[in-house]
Length: 240
Image (cartoon, rainbow, N blue to C red; front, side, top):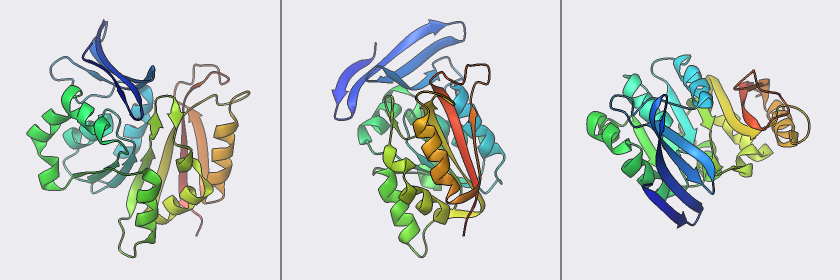
C-alpha cells in the first residue's frame, strides 16, 4: 500500500494488486474505486475501466483539432491517453481537489506524461482547480469563452456523483458551450432500470429539455439492467 490518508473529500487509499492483466494500481476514495492504471512498463497511459473506453471512442469520433472538456480528473486516465495517443487537440480538465492532481502526479504516472510530452508548454493540457459548475458558468457567460467539441462528465467523489452537474441549469450552460456538432456525455453509477434508477431517469429528462438527441446505455450490456453499474448518457444537437 502506497498511501492511506484522509483528505477533506474522503479517505484515499492507493495500492497495487497482481492480476492476470499484470500489476494494477487502484485509487479508492471512501472504499469506492475512483481510478486504476497499469503499473507494467509501457502500459502506464492505457485505460483499464470499460466506461473510459466509451469516452475514448467518443474522442476518436471527434475531429483531429478537437477541443475537449473533462469534468473530474481522478487519476487522470483520460488526459494520459489523450496526450499520448493524439498529436493534436486541446484537453481542459476541471478538478475540484488539488490533492487529487498531486496523487495522480505521484502515483498514477501523470508526472511521466508531463516529462515525455510537456503538454503544459504546448498548451494541449490545461488543469483548472475549481468546481465544474462554476467553470461551466464562467465559460457560458463569457462572450469569448471556449467552445468545446466534446464535454465529458466524470465528476465523482467515491461513489457519489456531483449532483450539481446533473441540474437543469448546468445542462443549459453545457448546451451553450458546445461548438456546432458538439456532444456531451455523463458517466453515472446507476441501475439502467428499476429501483434506484431515478437519478438516471431524471438526468435523461433534464437533458431532453436542452438537447434533441439523448440516449443512455449500459457500459456492459451483459449485466442485468437492475444492477448498479456504469451507464453512459450521451446528448447531442442542442436545442437553440
